[in-house]
Length: 196
Ligand SMILES: [Cu+2]
Image (cartoon, rainbow, N blue to C red; front, side, top):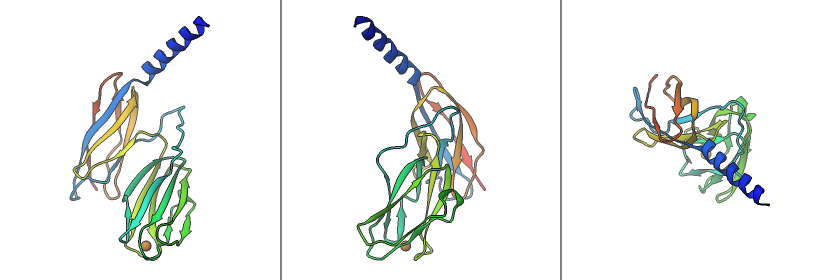
């Protein structure tokens, strides 16, 4: 019995060491746009690793004829619930292949319909009723993603130590991928310039 306890203690130490790492932090500057908000920064793939999607669905609201949030990154396999908070009917659909070109139809205020993003995907969300409505869902293959604040600052928390390809997505602007190395302990800073 004692041996088991020692083994479990040793294993838990190992797991802790293996999980060590830090945050990836930085600032995105935009050339050709008023700001670098709503930019997604993510590690798109880690060879040999898959991640379990969250049990809880994420929410995209439709309020005042606008989707909230405008940009929603999710882990592949995540269910997104589309809430209608307006008195009018909307009709959410996506024209993108990676979503199977879904069309959720229309539903009344206070109700939700959902879609599960089972493939890596950059998908635009549109409304058949209101052509000005537009939002984006990015389904990525790791849980290491974030969206910039309106000043372009970002933090991806608790990334295990290792070297990764960091990608940037913005609906209008681009940046090259960058390799980053998260040390065993501490943060790594990576800034980007996004442009046309
Ligand atoms: Cu609408």
